[in-house]
Amino acid sequence: MADGMKVKIITPEKQFYEGNADMIELTTTEGDIGVYPEHIPLTAVVAPGVLKIHEGKEVKEAALISGFLTIMPDAVTIMAEIAEWPDEIDFARAEQARVRAQRRLSEHSPEMDVARAEMALKRALVRLGLKH
Image 1 (cartoon, rainbow, N blue to C red):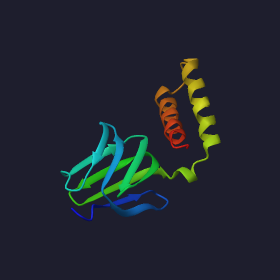
Image 2 (cartoon, rainbow, N blue to C red):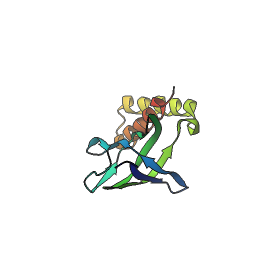
Image 3 (tube, helix red, strand yellow):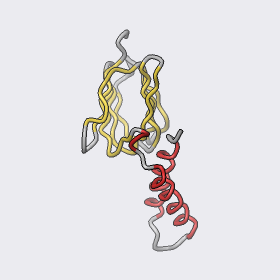
Image 4 (cartoon, helix red, strand yellow):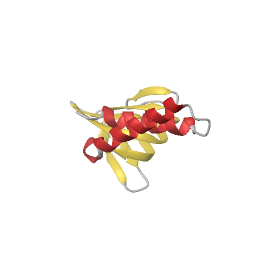
């Protein structure tokens, strides 16, 4: 497919991205996937990770925290809870969140919600992973 595939990413606040891509890479609850034009139809749950949008020789990266993904042969739609370009991320705040989450996890408190602390840590690490 010469024109690639249509990619649309929507968050509750805005349309985050709309354009054509040759390939996208992202993390789902089943693992990392790469999607090319003419991919088989698929629906998946998005997990925290770095989204890579390949447009020719350019690769755009964004933090993608959670949501749903629908793949059709000529289009990909992501309904994301949170999607952020690197210039939208407060890296100092993300570092504080990482430290806080790691401290909570190391305390082993019976009142602590482990799943919530682990998710906070994953979100922080994804954001920090985009710092260049």
